[in-house]
Amino acid sequence: MPKVLVPIAEGFEELEAVTIIDILRRANIEVTVAGLKDGPITGSRGTRLLPDIPLDSICDQTFDMIVLPGGMPGVRNLREDARIEKLLQDFDRTGRYTAAICAAPSILASYGLLQGKQATSNPKFRDQVAIPGVAYQEKAVVKDGKTITSRGPGTSIDFALELVGELSGPETRSEVEKSLIRA
Image (tube, rainbow, N blue to C red):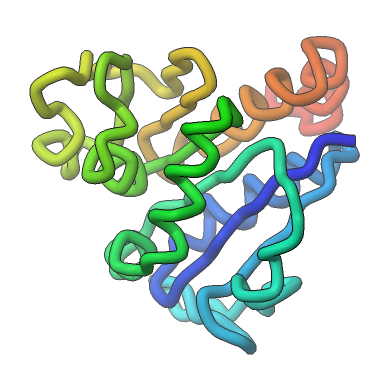
């Protein structure tokens, strides 16, 4: 069973985080929600989420993918946390999946993890992502190798389904998408 880490910080985007967690779990993917601090984390719209575990408690665990939700100031809080930088560098170095939505692709760009790749982001963060060496795309979801980026709350379902397809295959993605009754 694939294992995914979703770190959240104060000011995370609720719709993105919960959609990602929910859809991955519908696909029987093991999701660990790790808070930058112990206890409940408050999102950008005031919703409180209780992470499964504090980030410091995952040191001995291995994950197939890390997914960064957007939201402000959540993205700033993730970017400023040295543990997140180390995790992202480790995932990249070991060829594991890194995924980010909304403003969070700016974190990947700031650490040099989008160099030579195609990516997208929330249009408000384009200037932080569309830097030299990054082929910026105006698409809902952009996959380049093991890096997957998306634009924002409105693309959360498409983004999460792409993650399911990568980790569990197209058949599982199709089953989960049908169960959502999107049309």
